[in-house]
Each structure stands twice: as C-alpha cells, then as structure tokens.
Image 1 (tube, rainbow, N blue to C red):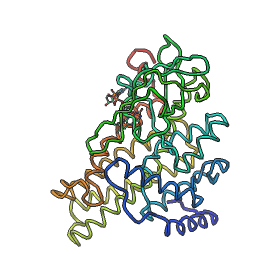
Image 2: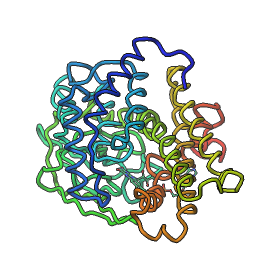
Image 3: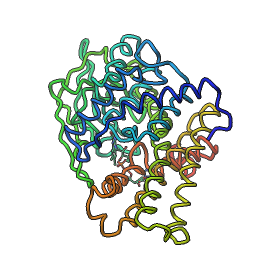
Image 4: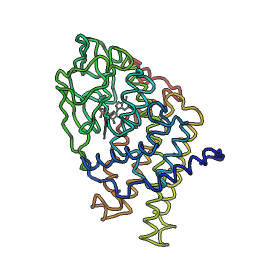
Amino acid sequence: MRIFQPPEEKAFRQEVRDWLETNVPRGRRPQEGGEAQRDFDVAWRRRQFDGGWGHIAWPKEYGGRGLPITRQLVWYEECARAGAPEHGHNVFFVALQHAGPTLIARASDEQKAHHLPLILKGEAIWCQGFSEPGAGSDLAAIRTRGEVDGDDIVITGQKIWTSYAVHARYQELLVRTEPGSQRHRGLTFVICDMKAPGIEVRPIRNIAGGNDFCEVFYDGARLPLSTVVGGLGNGWDVAMSLLAFERGAASFPVAIETAARVEELIEYVEETRPGRWRDTEVGARLAEARADAAALKAMVHLLIARGSPAGEGSHVRLFMAELTKRISALAMDLLGPDALDRNALGGWPRRYLEDFKTTIAAGTSQIQRNIIGERVLGLPKEGARAGGKA
Ligand SMILES: Cc1cc2nc3c(=O)[nH]c(=O)nc-3n(C[C@H](O)[C@H](O)[C@H](O)COP(=O)(O)OP(=O)(O)OC[C@H]3O[C@@H](n4cnc5c(N)ncnc54)[C@H](O)[C@@H]3O)c2cc1C
C-alpha cells in the first residue's frame, strides 16, 4: 500500500510474521458468543502479551512497545495475512480500541498504571455504558444519575445495548452528576467496577444468536470518587475524546481485515465455480469489493499520514461500515441456499447478521455523515440549518 517501506519497518514486519507463524491459534474462534468465545479471546490476548506483543503503540511502561501507529497497521496487516483472530471481533474490542486510548489520553497516572496492564494481560474486559433508552444518537440526553456522597459517587439508572457487559470487569460509564443540569453540562465519566453491589446485567439475545450485549441497571451502586476520569463535571469532554477513538482508530483493524475477507470470498468462488465466474455479475461484484477494500485501506494510511485531524475518522468509519455490510450481503448471494447454515463458509451467514450493527453502533451512518458535514466540510450545524438550537 505504501510506496516506500523504511528498512526498520521491513525488519519489524518480518519479526511479526515469524512470531505469528508459530503462535496464531490453530483452532477457530468459537462462533457462538458466551464463555467459550470469551475464554478463546482471553487466551489469545494473554499469548500476545507473554510473547511481547501486548500492544504495538501503547507506552512501554504499561506493557506496550511504544512504537508509532504505522507499526500498529503492520501488525494488523500481518495478523490478517496469518489468519489470526480478528481484532474487530473480540471481547477486548472496547478495552483495546477506545477505553485504553482514552485512559492514556485523559486518566491519572494511578488510573493508567492500574488499568492498562490489566487490559493487555487479558485480565480485564471492558464495556461501554453510554447509550440509554431515549439517549442513543443524542448522547447528551442521558439521565443515569451519579450522586456524590462523601468519597463516593452513587449510581442510579439504566444503560442499554452494552456490548460485552456479561463478561466485563470495567465499564466506561457516563452519568449526570450535577442535579438539574442540561445536555452536555454536568456529566461525569467514571470507571465503573461491574462487580459493585447494585449493578445488574441482563443479556439481550441478538439476531445472530449472540447474547453478549445487554441492558445494565444501577440501583444505588457505590463507586469511589477516585474512579472519575478527567474531573467531576467534565464527562462530556472525556466522552468526546473517547468517541474520536471509537469513530476513528477503532475502525483501522476492521478496515485492514476487510481486504483479507474479500480474498476469502474470491478463493471460495474460484474453488466452487472454477473459470466460470470471471465475466459474470459475480465477477464484477467481487472486483468492486476488492477495489473498495483496497480504497478503504488507503484511506486509513492517508488519514494517518495526515495526522488524523479531528472528526476526519468518521469518513473511514462510514465507508468501512457500509462496505462491510455490502460484502457480507455478497457472501450470502454467493452461498445461495447454503446460507441457511449460520456457520457455512467460516461463518459468513452469522457475520451477515452481525454486520447489521456496523451502521448503527459507534454512531449511525446518518450521524457519521453529520459529523463529516459539520467538522470536516465546515457546513452549518444541523440545529442551525433547521433553525433550532445548534
Ligand atoms: C450491536 C450494537 C452494539 C452496541 N453497543 C453499544 C455499547 O457497547 N455501548 C453503548 O453505549 N451503546 C452501544 N450501542 C448503541 C448505539 O450506540 C446506538 O444504537 C446508536 O448510537 C443509535 O442510537 P439509538 O439506537 O438510540 O437510535 P436513535 O438515536 O433513536 O436513532 C434512530 C434513527 O434516527 C436517526 N437519527 C437520529 N438522530 C439523527 C440526526 N441528528 N440526524 C439524522 N438522523 C438521525 C438514526 O440514524 C437512526 O436511523 C450498540 C448498538 C448496537 C446495534
């Protein structure tokens, strides 16, 4: 993808390749959610940490290698090439892709020293407690309360669509701490211990058969004030840092892995319809998917080369989410009646069902378009256009 690869990057790539060759798990990741899948992900994470690959870009003092983000992309590329478990689908997604980066950017030294190594060693799965019934795209409408009581903060309310809450030890939790406050004022970001008394997790069964996303209820759950990140009342600002990671760099592994998934489909068609597909509609759709996957990868490299200005990650997120759905729909067409088996062709039908979420989670496609319009293209704000509050 890049025209010039510095020699040290070439050496790094070889080192990664050598390690992956002997360490990528032989067995497939269990397809059904639940404990078997969680245990698989925990074991793989631990193996990476023990092998010295806990994280490429996180600081050395917390168990990372402290290397530039371009090396992180090399890691993703080599993992995809080696058929390693996908970074975009595992129980550490929240912890690695947005909780960790947000802590690095915004947390206290004590918070970082405690939480970051736990994540890298596979000892702490995280979930995100932002969305509520009535507050999804409109995050500033959240109502879950955090009342300061002495040295504690007491949480009461409800979150919904909380991915991995059944497995999580910690949660990125956004609550309203200033009574009577409106919108983005008076919010606080807390690291919530999911084992605290007063927290109840109720799994929701999704269309793909998994149950790792949940409702979470808080009934006077007491957390020490030392769990607040960025100070009381500054939660919106911390949440915006987090969403920049979630809507930006968190898409990178999926973007890189998409190209490998397209090649998987091309291989399948070569095997099942040798020589009979190239000049057909199937051939054209596969060629388009391959070109789009290459474009997506190029967008990631370009974004990094440009230093990722605020808001710009949303165009990668949007293109990635829509392309992912298009490619899994193509897989379903290729499978025909075999698609009735959710595990056919390495689980593509299950993936097709799971991929409905990609244009909803982390902000719907409409919200990403709004962000691109307002923050990248400099168009008037949505409320201003409608004549309402900006
Ligand atoms: C599989 C999955 C996993 C998730 N995991 C988590 C998680 O771990 N933690 C968490 O906190 N949340 C999670 N979410 C929730 C997700 O962030 C929300 O579903 C999303 O933000 C949309 O909110 P909503 O569902 O309330 O829909 P709404 O906000 O009610 O939106 C409904 C429709 O209106 C459109 N719309 C809303 N506002 C605008 C606007 N201003 N302009 C144009 N169109 C608009 C939306 O695009 C959408 O089509 C998850 C969701 C899914 C599907």
